[in-house]
Length: 76
Ligand code: SF4
Image 1 (cartoon, rainbow, N blue to C red):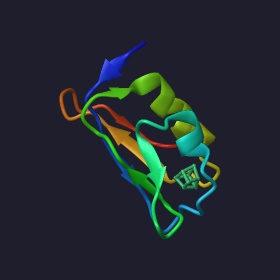
Image 2 (tube, helix red, strand yellow):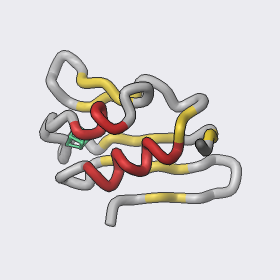
Image 3 (cartoon, rainbow, N blue to C red):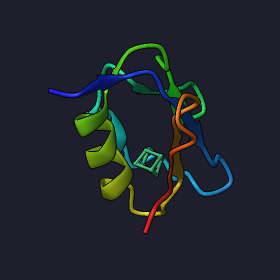
C-alpha cells in the first residue's frame, strides 16, 4: 500500500455525484449536502485507492497533485 501526501481537486462543474470516488476511496472522498464529491482528507492518503477513484470517475472531475515532487495526475 502506497501512502503519500497529495493535493486532490474536484471540478464541481463536472461532478455529477455518481459516488464512484466514495466507493473506491471512502477515506478521501465524501458526498456533500449538494450531492457532489468533497475531499475529506488530503493529508495522508492511500494513493492506489485515489488513483482508482480518478480512473473510475465517469466525468474526469478528479485531479491529483503531489506538492513534493511536482507530480500531477489528471484524468485520461
Ligand atoms: S466519481 Fe466523479 S462524478 Fe462521481 S462523485 Fe466522484 S468526482 Fe463526482
